[in-house]
Length: 128
Image 1 (spheres, rainbow, N blue to C red):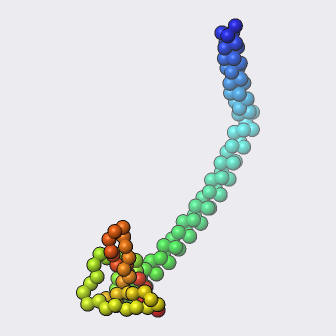
Image 2 (image 1 turned 90 degrees about the horizontal axis):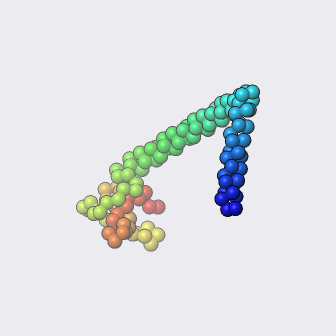
Image 3 (image 1 turned 180 degrees about the horizontal axis):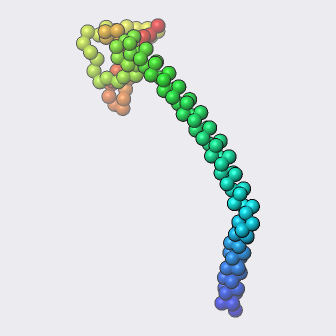
């Protein structure tokens, strides 16, 4: 009795799979599915292309703004802001602004920080 139920279940599954496979092919024979699919793909592609070009333009503008800021920061102090050094250059003087101590070295301002267990110095903008 168990084998008959297994065979019946297998046959039912195979028949359902066959029916599901035939329905999309029947739509494709008459052409409705094929035309609709092409139109959807063209519309989706054009919308995606417009979004991609807008995103590319925005990222180029952001990159240009970042380069301008970096150039301004570098020209003001000589060393780009955010640069991490392990040792200070010679002839640095301590400057305290608002309770925070900075080191001024040749027009660049450094702030002490920890990177893991190591003491490093980070170039910052001129403190006010």
